[in-house]
Length: 178
Ligand code: ZN
Image (cartoon, rainbow, N blue to C red; front, side):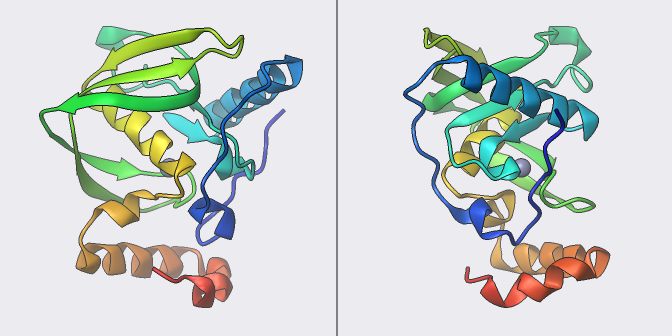
């Protein structure tokens, strides 16, 4: 089932998600719907708050832009970056900010601990676009959006362009605090 994607400045995008503690069929079905929604929108990743659910679930599939290291779909529950080094700058976009993008600097090599939809504890190492994507989605679980990771000036420019493209979203602009 394809879920509606929340667009900036929907307040849910600024909230912190809670840990998943129940690893049941409902969780697996929700994660499948998230993946379906991500593919339908041609995104590289999606976080639960983007479909209005404040729970720590993300899906990632960067095969479209990184065929060399094919990993397919990865569903990460309660993901956490446990180490990071180096740095990478990537032009990031977001399904909640259609039509705009900006360069963001992040650690490149990361190690991430997470749980599968069955609750099993796993770790994965990532670098390049895979790493950027995982970090971008984990940010969403903390109410952080990519525009929070650029300079004040760039943030202003990105948002001005965004509201020009999506004037229907500007009604909520007043609620934008940061
Ligand atoms: Zn995003």
